[in-house]
Length: 115
Image (tube, rainbow, N blue to C red; front, side, top):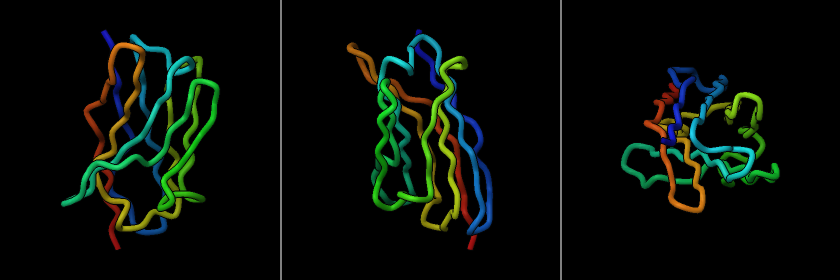
């Protein structure tokens, strides 16, 4: 059974930082692509960052230079380091990973950035 468990969300002032974690079980993040999505109030869920099994990363234009996705293979965990946070970064952040069978989602973690 695949599980993705996010943590690290919270309330932070604009300009601050947060680090999100996504601990995976039942799926190897070293062999599959992991992604972070966010859903902001009134908006569709959007892709924020992704990392392939080989380590290639890509980011939404809105977060380039501020967010960094990384992975710790020994813990089968991906991280999203978020710096210089803006109020528009507010939303629920979801971890996603997919293998050949299906796509899996975590339960999400709330990030709120106050102005």
